[in-house]
View 1 (tube, helix red, strand yellow):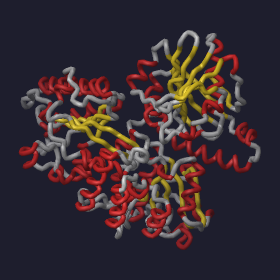
View 2: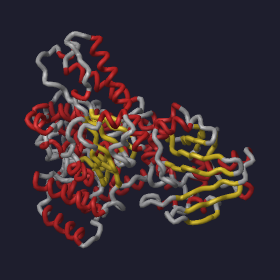
View 3: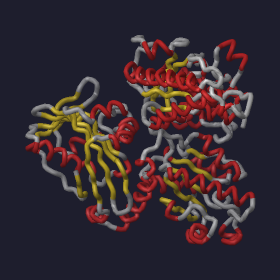
View 4: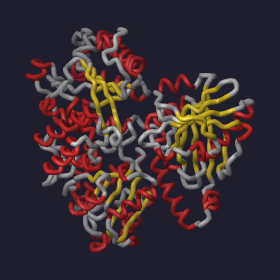
Length: 629
């Protein structure tokens, strides 16, 4: 792989320079450039010249504030014991490729200790995330060779520093810290990891410490070590510039590092891919099932090509186990296309792993639109994989928001291209994430039932829905925080709370915190809603109301609101108040409170709208969901 060339991205368009010039002209006129056009140009196999042009344009757009209404804004602080000045421009460019407007704020050189341990705040503002990149010299404790006790003490000191920085990020900037893991050290011996006091062993233990903290939800990690290993330590580290300019990694790898970080930020902002759309012939197996028949396709059978396809199917199944929904889009006869899933003994993927199976002779772009509509997901949520370059180009032209991966011609490299793209990057998984693919499969089954049942109330009854409403607790804490920080569309106030803040809410007598789960006869959808209500003696105020778009138009909000007013009546509360704060992404809920019986009170100068409803005036809505509290 050529560092910075991004081989999983589409090839550079022949008219790339002309199209970018057009966008620069739009910017020069003071107009906001088209989101799709700009994202498409940033998300190609950029050479050095193109990379610099995108970086310059991203910087200009950020300063002019001309991408805020389209690209999801992210403000990230950069803190390290080495120079990070080479990151902001590549980060801004990588953000455009992933639908983000990334603004970086760099701390003064070597401000690590003062930020972690003193009242000083080198950022002086709120942030969406703080990226902390430390090298081994940040952990200054002595570690004599073979002295296990000294190594343990040094690790304890490192743990204290990391905890202090994570706490400072939350307290001073209202955000979660992201710690870069430490790249491996150049080794003198194969016994480095087994020898206390060596650099390689200490870095390995630091990385395990960081990983455990991320698992516990205390911070996030950017796996710099894995990326450095991927490109090679000799490529990752520039010893001359490291000593001369205190640069933690080579300037040449900055675009790749920035893209890797941007993938993590996209996952934080809920912009990671949720669905994988797969071609069949020469993508999941070798050959053409319609021509070669079941015995003629190449899958397993102790052949190098066949084994590569089996490995790829195992990789695809591992994505599903992470919550990625799978769909098939193939130009084929449906019955013939399904035959390998049903009858081939080497087939890893089965029909029930696939939520939507589109095998026909229609245009693939049309079929992908159908898949998106069936699953109620936006096109930007999908990754498309097809061995045919012409089909890939067609989908890119018709559906530029779909991420079409350049997988190449050899199935041995399919896994590498998709994994390295970062499109499926995610935060530490929880049970709700893992069950998401099943939930989407259930949604597809429900959509099929809905198409057959004309009466909508009969359809809702047929789903046999069951809802659980429970207070915030430790078991649900991670998913609650995840929903709060990722949900944008069905979110009435878009207020963000960290996992630590959610933890404090669990014991706050002045708050009601509800986690809402839903299941039906097809699937367990897991936690699909979060409600936070602030309690006063005579009135309750809805602070946060958000829901997953996976279960729209099922009466979820009506059912939850019925239960909220029932609880208010039992507590002898006179009124429930509410606030809607408009954003560029939550317009779908602009009439939420009026639909549910609230009266508009006033509109504030900041465009927020206040509503209220007397408890005695509330009329319960019809519901088709059984509820347990």
